[in-house]
Image (cartoon, rainbow, N blue to C red; front, side, top):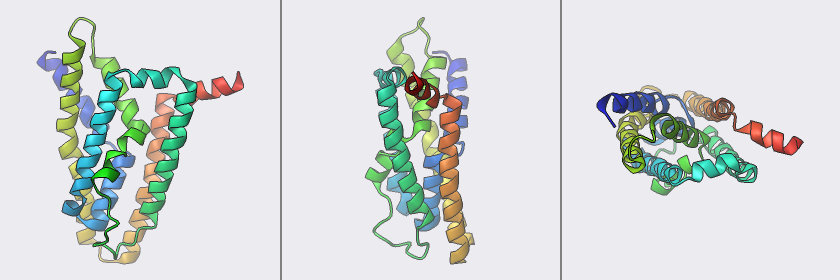
Length: 210
């Protein structure tokens, strides 16, 4: 893969990883409620989970999802249930309990992206757009994954640190609660937009109507 294509992959990764999504909303909420460093294990867990999605897609699991309406339905039900649960947790979080042992850790972050539709849509689109038959599949996939990981740490950190800045600037618990509710709503909106853009629901509806 030449440097020009690698630059395009990096720009694509920045636009997808840096844009609002359920994981970024959760990172921001965690930063707002617990601070950046106490949220760092959660941040690293989320990046590790994205790596799992990349590997699974490279091995063909992404294609399996697109060709099996049953698997799509199971995945969507599981992911939507989990996202709704997380949105509820964020919306009802108590901003006064910043030292709570309930703060998300590495394992909580690890399962985020495997159950995040946006992550699958993003990496499937990246492989489809930038992997060509003229070059080694393995080397191209490796480079794309490495670029995404290098982009993820600083961009995800910005969202988490942004929440940390809110925590420092906002002293009103009522305002912090309102911020948590807003982030929870944005999580749900981001998931809906990702599903709509990927036309994930169309095959499911067609199979049900058939």
